[in-house]
Picture (spheres, rainbow, N blue to C red):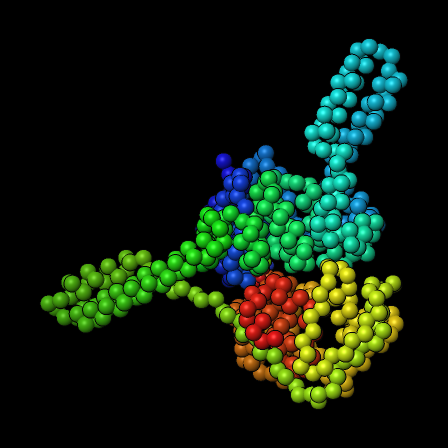
Length: 482
Ligand SMILES: Nc1ncnc2c1ncn2[C@@H]1O[C@H](COP(=O)(O)OP(=O)(O)OP(=O)(O)O)[C@@H](O)[C@H]1O
Ligand SMILES: [Mg+2]
């Protein structure tokens, strides 16, 4: 029996079709990668499985004995509790059992009645067994193991949850989810907020995970290590491929080639029939033949034209600048109330390409935000050459007004641009025409990232400051431009 299955799934957002009478099944032992280009409906499917999105049509059936967990980054957490307390929440049921055990043991100490005592001892034994069976006495070391693996120890288990950065918060939520150890994990792009070493840890965790999972990730190297089957979304349909990611890629390529061959063959067939019909329908001697071919043509199940994904193409405009140092950073201290990092001193010259690396939450984004003037420096200084123009790409998909459309976001920044140019620029970054007029908040993660890149692309600048630009987006097109 499957752990979960969705059948007869049909869903649209307005005019945009996402699924058309398709299905997905997850079986015990499945370690499933969910793939498909940006905006195809991966996050939507996860939301359908968790009941956040109710599909237009379809039947979602979870096996009642199965527990599942997913990363809800919107979830509210009490901001006063510490990270450790929050993580301990994963074992709430065990702590409750421990409380009960203590209570029963107290009552045993005072109990005079023989029968009552017998009953209490039984309960005490049950509680004790339950705690032991669930490894209760190793809870703390379990928490520490996961916290170290995901790099939480680096920013401290005693930090109040309210003080965490977006990425740190997401990590802590992932840690709790893994500690809860449900039968099925649903993970949507968990590697986006992890550093290389923690991605490595997560990969190992997932490889040895006893349960099943569905995972979305644009990191194909990561996927190929952890999955044993793929569900790929294309043409509003979910197709399952068993075996490795590489095997899936091969099969998918083969399938696409076959489809294209069949499509081209059918198009030729249609053209031939149509031509015959046109030439013969009015001719008395051949009209019967022509009519029968017309019927054949009408009855033919026509293959839809294969849609090729819009390949984004990013070109950043360059504003020339003299060869002087572009940026001088001197003894700069960055942070909020206290410095996050030792004092930074560096000089950046024209043509230099600098990578900022380090653990998640250590202060990379804070450093970039400081030198972009978004948050104040704690001490020290930074100075740009006067004709430096910065193009800044912020890590998080946050918008001043998420109700705005992608079109107006660009148009307001560049009011002199013609409407057609605005549309063309967004298209070049990989947005489909219907998405241009869609509200920013309803665009998928990848689509939002493309709007942000488009904004930078239109501005002639000479210093790009990019904070994790490859999260969410197919990366090849971007890399060749940097
Ligand atoms: N509430 C909504 N209203 C209109 N369109 C929506 C809404 N929510 C999602 N969409 C659209 O549905 C499509 C599927 O979105 P979804 O977030 O599921 O894509 P995805 O496969 O997860 O993409 P990505 O790889 O970029 O994360 C996108 O084109 C998105 O713009
Ligand atoms: Mg998504």
